[in-house]
Amino acid sequence: MTRLVDLSVPTEQTDSEATPVKIDLLDHVAGATVLGLSPEDFPGGMAISNETVTLTTHTGTHMDAPLHYGPLTGDAPARSIDQVPLEWCYGPGVRLDFRDVPPGQGITVTMLEEEFSRIGHVPVAGDIVLLWTGADALWGSSDYLTTFAGLTGEGTVFLAEHGVKVIGIDAWGLDRPIPHMIEDYRRTGDRSVLWPAHVAGRTHPYLQLEKLAHLGDLPGPTGYTVACFPVPVTGAGAGWTRVVAICDA
Image 1 (cartoon, rainbow, N blue to C red):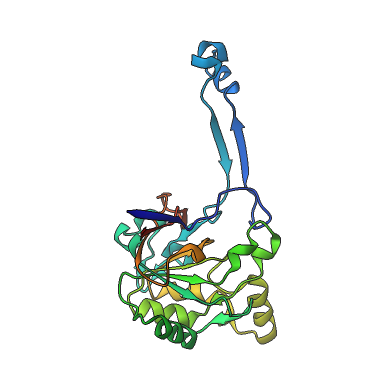
Image 2 (cartoon, rainbow, N blue to C red; image 1 turned 135 degrees about the vertical axis):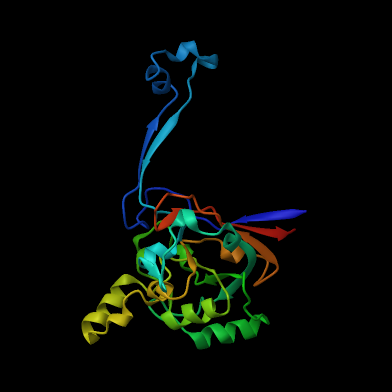
């Protein structure tokens, strides 16, 4: 028997989103009037409903495509989300536990190597690596936007050079929180501290999954398949994604 674990957050208006989410409902009564009919004209006295949703492609659980990081990946045009190979979006899941890394800190290559050693796994091409920080416990609050650990640029390159094409995190973003990066930049003037995990994608093609959830519900560090197919928004740098782990019950 197969067990499915939903690794996604809902798409909703919440303090955990940096940009507004607006959902306008066309209910079962209004759904009739826009067609020039009345609810009584439909079976059960109800028409069909609809919703108009205004949001960004980075709202909710989503996948960042290479185009989000910059216009080029190496010397080639960066792929938009509708150009992402579906083969990259289905593969063995590998959960790495970094819940002990303090918010605002970076997950380094050394940390990655130690965690891979602890779980007895060597990263290989096709792995979908899931960074477990515990930040999803803050979903629904504004603290979710700023209270998490992020992946360093060197850590991103380390995974990409092992053939990993999808890196996910249960936090608002893959990089460290924005206030921490900007503070470091203003203090040092070093541009490399700004979005280093994203910028690494300009030379190493990979995809990010942001705003994952429920990584603690997985049966362990490995032993399941992750499906994370994005909505193919033409020409966009990201797309909404329902991320599901497929586990043996």
